[in-house]
Figure 1 (tube, rainbow, N blue to C red):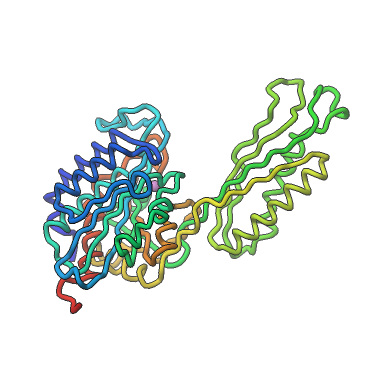
Figure 2: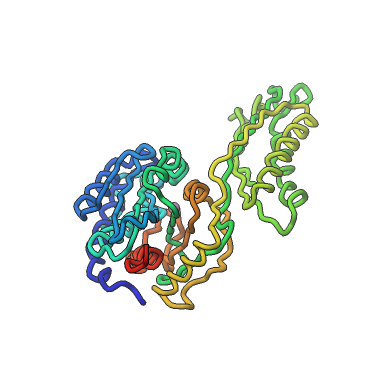
Length: 393
Ligand code: NI
C-alpha cells in the first residue's frame, strides 16, 4: 500500500496550513495562536473531544473509531513551537516576526498531524480511539513533560505513543528509526569559579580564575576520552566561557562556564555527572580557586520500545517500500522531549526525510512540503494497521 490517495487531494490545503503556521512562529509555551488554530481545525473536522490547556498550552483531540469499545488508544504526537532565530529563507511564507522562526519544522509536524486527523475523522476505518497530541515547548521548555505531568496519558487512556520528526539530509519519502536509545539525554551544567581579581601586571597578588576555568575546560574533555567506556557514547561540550573583566589589564574575580552533556544510557549519565563534580572541585582547588558546580538533568534519553519500533518500521515500509526504511539508523546526540512520553508509555519515534535542505535550527531551513503525503500516510496507516476496523474486540 503506497501513499494514501486522499493526501494528494488534501496536499494544497495541508500545505497552506503549514505555511500559515510558518509565517506566525511562537516560542515555548507561548503558542496561543497555533494552539487555537489547531483546536479550531480539530473541531471543524468533527474530532469527538478537543481539550485545550493540557501542559499549559497543549491540545489533545480524541477521535473515536468504529469499535471504540475495544478500548485501545493510540497517541500520535506533534510539536508546535518555533525557535528564537532570525529567518533568512526569503520565502513568501517566511516569519512575520523578526527573531522567531520555525527552523525545526514543527510547523510541518503540526500540519501533517492535522491532515491525518482530518482523514481519520472522515474515514474512521479503525477500531479503538486515536489521541492526536499537539505539544508546546519542545525546544527546551519540556512541554512533553508538562503534558505527561498533567495526566494526559490517564485522562485519554493512551496505551502507546508515536512521534515523528523531519530530517534534512534524508531523502523525501524515506524513514529512519531504531529500537532502543535513539536520541540523547540533554543535561546542562553551570560552573562558577571564584578567585581574587586585581592588576593584570601583578598576577602574584591575585588568584586568577581564568586559568582555573581553562584547566577545568580541558580536564572535562578527559571524561569522555578517559573515563567512559570507548564503546559507549557521550558528549561533554563547554559552550560558554565568561569572565567578569572586560579590560586588558584586569584579572577577573569570577569566571562562569556553561555547557551541555549528552548521553545515551543512565549509567553513563550518572558516571559523567559524578566525575564532573570531582574534576571541577579538585581542579579549582589545585588552582587556589573555589568552584560552585550546578548540574541540571534536562530531557531523558529517547528510548524506542522494541515491539512498537518493529511495527512502526513495517508500517512505514508499507507506505514507502521495503528499501526506503532504515530501521538501524545511528542514534543522535540531540535530544527530544518526546522522551517523557516514551517514558510514560511504550512507543516509537521516527524520522521522515526532508530532502536536501538546510539543517535543523539553521536560518535558511524550511520544512519540505513534498514530505507531507508521506508523513500523513504513515500516521493514518499506523492507526489503521495497529487497530484494524475488522479486528475482533
Ligand atoms: Ni524539532
